[in-house]
Image 1 (cartoon, rainbow, N blue to C red):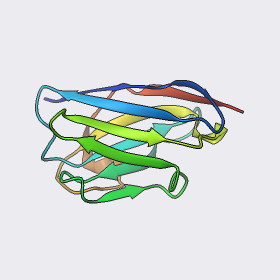
Image 2 (cartoon, rainbow, N blue to C red):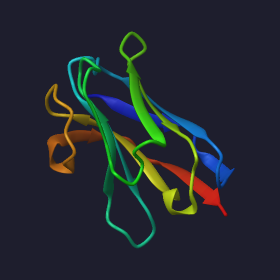
Image 3 (cartoon, one colour):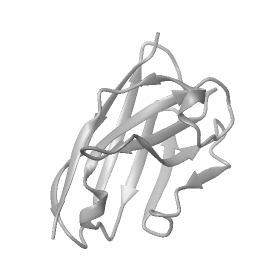
Image 4 (cartoon, rainbow, N blue to C red):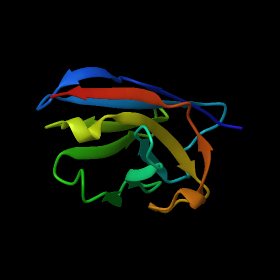
Length: 124
């Protein structure tokens, strides 16, 4: 069983940047796609970004395209989300997740391991 632990969240002003990290332990995630999702208060969890096992294919939600970048460091078993030009509407709890297979996917149904989530708050 893999454990996923997010870090790097916090409070930032609009226009600022944060980098989220997701450290995996218990087993390697090198053979699996990974992703980031977020959930704002009163809203459903939504897809943010995903990356394939090789790192060669990524998807980003339209709402974050050009501002957020997903990446992974396979030797470190760690996933990242670089968030630039943050907006108040990016405020949410962010979750990292491991996919059931090696592909990058945008549907939460294909992710079977989830972190506890980390708060990101963007003040306007």
